[in-house]
Structure formats: structure tokens, C-alpha cells
Length: 209
Picture (cartoon, rainbow, N blue to C red):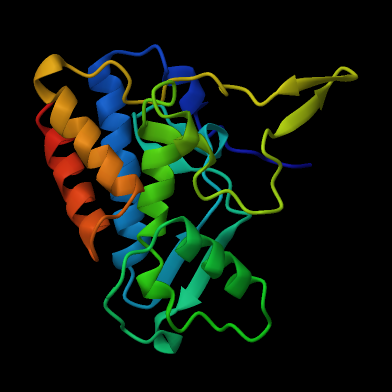
């Protein structure tokens, strides 16, 4: 017998929810990354597989990571505490993925890569993907196909939500410009540490809505 806990509704089912609900989910996603990076004094948790189906909202309205297959658990004692001294965008992310598949890599410099989790959340879950379709592919591994497809009843269908707008579609006019600016800087870092500054700005914007 297998007992399975119902984790709640996956994020894709909230695309038509009110702005307030979607903004709260977005804020919780960013705070979840805060927790994985910083909360535990002994461990760093790191994940690269970001999709609408890997997160769910439970009956209390709390966002949960429900697919733990690709979560790395890293002992802080093995980590060198390095500040990020350079920007980390697509090529940097690809370099990390190569390291992760190398037997010689032991995660000693993982702290400089952990902000990539924010970029994946901003690009693939939060952004207006109709306006910025390129962001949907941000951070995907080289092994992943350009258009992920699944077999359903003997036919091939495009990945669900490939045409979706992202959780933060249709923001109130008063925050539209600063929100889009912060999302852009979260995805594409323009100066060292700029992604963390953008995430802080995003959190402040979302807390006010």
C-alpha cells in the first residue's frame, strides 16, 4: 500500500485567478528560494527543474515544491563562502550544468550559482511569456528539446501552457512598468549582484499589491 499526501493544486490551475492571488503565489515562490539558499545553517538546497507542475498551492494557500527529484542537498561545510563577483546569465548557467555532471565537481562554489534559481522562477513562471517567449526556455538543459513534447493517447501534444502568459500577467497599471523592469533584471543580470537587487524590488512590489 502506498499513502500519498495531496499537495494541492499545481500552479497552472491559478492562471485565471485574481491578481492578488497570483501576486501572493509569486511572492511565496521567491521567498521559497530565499529559504532554500539561506535558512538552514547546515545545508544549501538547490534545484534547476522549474515548471508549473513542480509546485502546488495547498488548502491553506501555501506554495510547496512537490517534485524533489532534482533537488541537490549540499553540506555547507564543503562550501567556500564566495561573493558573486561577476554576472551569471545563460552561459554561466550552462557552465554550472556541465560542472554538475562532472565527477570532479564537489559544489564548493555553489553559492555563487544559487541566484540562478530566482532567474528560472522569474523567466519560466512569472514573466509575461507571450511578450517574452524566449524566457520560457531560460535555464533549460542542453539535453532538453527545444519544444518539450509528451505522448498522450498515441499522439504528440505540445507541452501544456506553452502559450501561457506567466503568473504575473495583467498587473495593475500603477506597478506594470517597475514590475516588468524588475522581472527583466531578475532574468538577465546586468551587473554583479543585480539579480538579488531585482528580486528584493520584486518582493517589495508584490507585498504592496
